[in-house]
Amino acid sequence: MKAGALVENIRMSVRSIASNKVRSFLTALGVMIGTGAVIAMLALGAGAQKSVEGSLQALGSNLLIVYSGQPRGGALIRRSTTNIIPTITDTDIDAIRRLIPNLVTYLAPESSANGQAKFGSTNVNVTIVGTGVDYPSIRNVRPVVGSFFTPLELDGRKTVVVLGSQVYQDLFQGTGDPVGQKVRLNGLSYRVIGVLERKGNSTTDSSVFVPITTYKRYVSGADKYALVNVQAASVEVMREAQSAIEKELLRLHRLPTMDSADFYIANQLDLLNTLQGVAGTFTLLLGGIAAISLIVGGIGIMNIMLVSVTERTREIGIRMALGAKTGDIIAQFMTEAIILSVGGGLFGIGIGYGTSWAFSKFGGIASEVNLLAVILSFGFSVLIGLFFGGYPAYHASRLDPIQALRYE
Amino acid sequence: MIVVKNLSRHYQMGPTIVKALDDVSFTIEGGEFVAIVGPSGSGKSTLMNILGCLDSPTLGSYVLAGEEVSHLKPNQLADIRNRRIGFVFQSFNLLPRETALENVELPLIYQGVPLKERKKIALAMLKRVGLEGREKHIPSELSGGQRQRVAIARALAASPSILLADEPTGALDTKTGVEIMELFHALHKEGSTIILVTHDPGIARQAERVIQIQDGRILKDLPSKEWAA
Image 1 (cartoon, chains in turn orange, purple):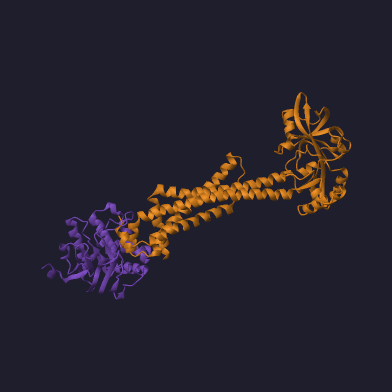
Image 2: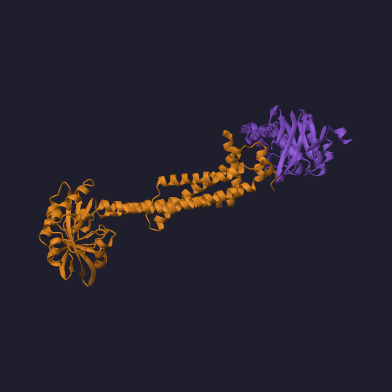
């Protein structure tokens, strides 16, 4: 094919597409929706992945949680520990503390129980959490008003309490400075010293936090802890810290292996990997379904191109009589199919962006268009044009000029 | 210009072989104006398709402008049609969405002539057939006679060796038909080789020479004056 012939083909194709506007639009619409769907679905998947990572980060960084009892799924997210029979002792805590600073930065034991908080005449059901002073650092949660309790208050078993944001809302209707106010927990009066920032997960927001020492004296008599929050020194040493803790605790509990252990360790990395895997599968699934719609769009192009070839049999005959070669005819119809699919693909990118934006704006679903998805789906739509335009074009080029000229 | 020797075209129709053309030989010199005449089914259309390189003969040889074309492949035939043959059809066969000018440009596009030169040639051809000022019209905006003129301009555009006209006046009224024939005469005078296929003896008589076909064979091959007598 000569160089000028390409320009000529594009001109002819545009004219042919323009002469059948509605049909051309509907044909391209299939590819538009397909491309748009692929981009939007991949954006949704990427958004899901991002928000999973985000919410995991919100839990704290380099987090290991040593739980009492047997392993359970989703351990890192589930914060309600009120049903756990505690097995972790002060000796265990001391053993973990010895891993500071090489493997561990912070640790905070934690036990909790359901209880009632009362301020004035307002009663709220809460989770009463007893923990250590490093809890905010480990779980990445800061007081917005006042402060968390100090080592002094911890050692002195002070009856002080830090409120979760929802508890503050419920007890104080979100107004007034709560610091210094007295709140009754299970009948005992505590002085409010702070309110935590809103975390968006109900277990933190609807809990109240007291020093673990106070908890042990007034809330639960148990000596053991439900769990220990541990912050590893870095991402790199998370596994090492995990196995060091496992080894120490197995020794202290006189247990041979983790299979028979009365504790287990949830690792943020494992959970991150699992959730990312889930999000990845989810992305693949959505993208796959969308890709099918793109293929269906391609079949639409093929269908219309076949109709177009039949309708233009006589035109093909004339062109052949005037000297069009097989390649010229193929090029003409391929150009037309590719213009339809590329046009559809370009509009589809717009639709993809729009849909993704609408997901975030109106659906409240995290969604992020990534450039690779755009390039991929656009490239795919071009391939679809080539592939599904190919057969009709070949079919056209094989017509017998004598028959084609006679075609009515 | 054209040397046809022992040309046959056979079609397989079920168990029987139909000899649409049976051992036809003739020579046409450059600048001749020849009518091929015969009733429908005589084989004249088959002969025209072969002369126009739209079809290949089963047997025999066809030399066009010094080149043996009877056994060429489809793409080679397309090239010969493009460079050597100018078709004029009964039903004009213009592309309905393209303007007169663009229709005339078509053979030049397939020859790879650059845009500017193509336009220049096409304009000159339209002028030659008396359609100056109609360049931008699409076929449906033109009369039958004007459409056939566009078709003739298109046939001339690539400076072909022969002009092959198939019933060029068949779809026109008598007066317009006469005008088109006058155009052919004028082109003949300028040196074009014209082969005109018709079933109409009145039209055939206007050529210099008449080849009459019947049942796939040449019945008569005479100067038109003798043929008419």
